[in-house]
Image (tube, rainbow, N blue to C red; front, top):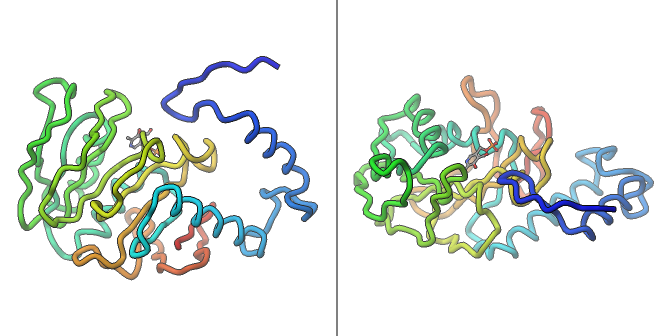
Length: 251
Ligand SMILES: Cc1ncc(COP(=O)(O)O)c(C=O)c1O
């Protein structure tokens, strides 16, 4: 068998042992006589897989206990809307850092929901650098930035101090590629298909780390749809009974 080297910005190479194990489990997952894709999403086997995924992610990223993990559908793109829908909390302003194509898309979407301020921009340099001086409005509900702009390759290696305002990061491009100081963020989200999942179903899901306890970021539920609002997912320690295609959970 000849394998190629694939450094795609989307799904890239996986270890051969991982692929071989997935292949082995395709017909019979752990003696159940079923493939994971054939299981009930409410059955104990799948609920167990979901719980393991949450535990593993929490351990890998050293996520503090006062943070919630949400596995959601819709990819990182849907978070461009869900972030303002959930984090404005009655305020009319949010600040964004503009460093390339993905943050530009996030800004465009947020403008449907609030007054968007540009806290910093590298547009003057054709998005070739990551500005470190941010001008954040004290009454902004949150500050959003893309910690690694996939297309231009502009990456932040340090977390900018935003003086207590909830910091939101689109970490799609380097999620789990290195440790993150989660406690510095109000919210981190990432499309799972790049670094942690597979394309296809995973391209419509995003792993999101959400602080449920920090002042200003406290919420009991997370709206999981775009306009019109279709459903709200409460934060439970079990998979959410969602009628949307795919699977949502939190833990
Ligand atoms: C930094 C960044 N944000 C957002 C997205 C959009 O992700 P998705 O395809 O999951 O909507 C991408 C993806 O390609 C990305 O690289």
